[in-house]
Every structure is written in C-alpha cells, then in structure tokens.
Amino acid sequence: MKIPINTPVVGREEVNEVRSVLLEKSLTTAANAGGKRVQEFEKLLADYTGSRYAIAVNSGTAALQAALYSLDIKSGDEVLLPSFTFVATANAVVSVGAKPVFVDIVSNNYTMDPDDLRRKITKKSKAVIPVHLYGNFAYMNEISEIANKRGLDVIEDAAQSLGTTYKNKQSGTFSRLGCFSMYAAKVVTAGEGGAIITNEKGLYEKLRKIRNHGMLHGYDTRILGLNLRLPEVSAAIAKIQMKKLPQLLKKREKNARVLTELLDDLNIILPIERTGVKVNWYLYTISTKNRDKLAKQLNEKGIGATAYYSIPAHKTPFYNGKTKLPITEWAASTVLSIPVHPLVTEDNLHYISKIMHQAVRK
Image (cartoon, rainbow, N blue to C red; front, side):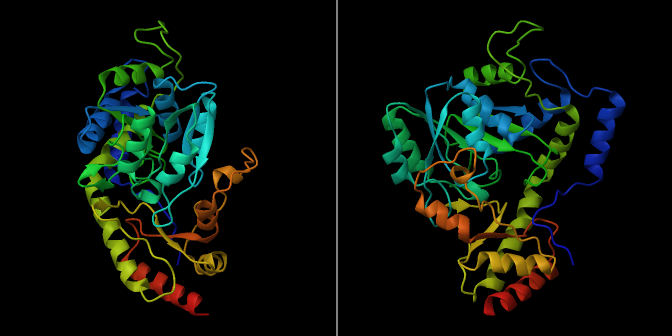
C-alpha cells in the first residue's frame, strides 16, 4: 500500500480544459490583463476570498516577490518573517535586495510569535510576512496591531492556507496583500502557479505591470517587473480546481477529523483548531519527540509521512544564521505530517492509525 503525503486531484474536467487551450493555441499572452483562463481564474479566486482583485502569477514565490516589489521593499530594508517555513519566503525577500529577519513561532500552531516579532523590529524594518503554515491561521490580530503601531506593511504568506478562515474571513485578506501557491501538492493546483489578492486598486494595477516586465501597453516598461505571468495551460487547471475547492476541503476536513479520533489515545501532540478558525487541513501535522523513528517506520509501510520543515530557513547553509529560535528548533525536530488529502480513503486512515499505534507503543 502506498499513501503519498499529498497528490494532485485532477480529472476529466482539467484534461478537457487543457485540451481546449492547446487546440486554441493560445498558450500565453503578454497582454496586461492576461489570457482568457487567467482572467477567469482570477475572478473565481477574488470571489472565493471576498477580495476586490486577484492577480495570477507563475508561482507562490513569484507572488511574494511581486508583493514585495509592489510595496517598494528594497536594499537596506528589513522584512520580518518566521524561519519555520519553506525557504521561498526568505528567498523572495533576498531577491528584492532586502534582509530577512527571522522571528520565532508559537508552539500551538507553528505560526509567527507576536511577542518575538515585537522584539525584533528595528528602524530598518519595513514589512512583516506572517505565514499561515500547514493551513493554520497566524495570530493576525496581534501581528496587525504591532505592524500598524510601527508603520510596517503586512504581506500574508497564505501559500498553504487557501480555504482557511478566521471568523468566516479568508486567510490572506487580513492585510494589504495575500499570497497563494498553486504548486502541485497544494489544496488547489495549477501544476505550478501563484496569486496575490488585494482590495487596493493602485496595488492591483501595479502588480499587473510587475508580472509583465513593468509594461502596460506593448514595450512601454514603466516600472521594474519580471516575467511572472501564469501560462494559460496552468490557469486552465487552476480554474477547474477552484470550482472543486469546496468539495476538496470537505474531504480533507473529514479525513482530519477521523484521524484525530483514531490517534487521540496516543502520546503525541495532535493538531487543533483555534477558536474561530476553520483550517483547510493542507497538512495534518503532529509532534512527537520520536519523530525520526516514527517517520521511518511509517515510510517503510508505504505511508508518506514527511517532516516539514526539519531544516528551518535560518539553519540552511545559505542563511547560516546564528539567531536563536528555540520553538522553531523544537518544532523542526519533532513535527511530522500525515496524509489526509482527498484521495486518502477511510481504509487508508485506519491503516495509518494501526501502523502508528504499533510504532508509538513500541
């Protein structure tokens, strides 16, 4: 039995939509508004998140990069972000010339610690990027209050949290800019893709130029931009995926609930939802001091249990930081994500539970 940690859920509808793009031979466009499918996807995403605008780009990293450019973050600026996330968040900051300042996390949901954020702010600080890790919702009320008092912009890294809400409001909408990923393993995929949401017309218009070499009409580059465009084939997949999102989230939620019931008697830390939060269950993440041993035993039985992120950004060779982040380092050595994606069956969940009980009780 093989149960991968995540796998894209694509079917005939996506195949047919991609086929239509290929037959039309409209694979991409340098038009400011984007191609037909790009515009259709953007409309679906804006409507779903309750945002005025959505701008599609070719990756979640590109979304963060474009957001930073749109706020004029540059060399000499500092951007505060958690180290406990995929390194793309930090890389996007470095790519615009700014310096990432790593902030510790809270232990109950692995997101940015507002108290440590407050301690790390300096005169050079210009922006904060909280990450809604694993689909958990960061402490946005506290983070926003701190940022507002210090005059800092906030960009939400919602790459993993499409469908996660706090008091019925979508993650990514608690700041000026929210960034999403449509990587193959995400709750909605485009193969590769990303998007930014905003309610500000000025940022929307600026972002459309940034994704297209700063151009508005033809070769009239007006600001610094790059080729961050989302191809029509990718947008075609994402468009269909958006229509399926509610049912995909429902299956993830059911699987997470069943797994919690099955594992509740084990001596491990299970994920929980904070009051007011509805998690999208992108990754069902437990914590245990015997993580590596448990992961090995699960993998040997065909269960794709995976540690995200056993090497936090500040510990990678490139960043090689000496910052002390005790909760981050605790999490990096103890977390383990278990499959709950929509293709996981109830039989799979019982099998996972059986193997975990055998492994933990040894």
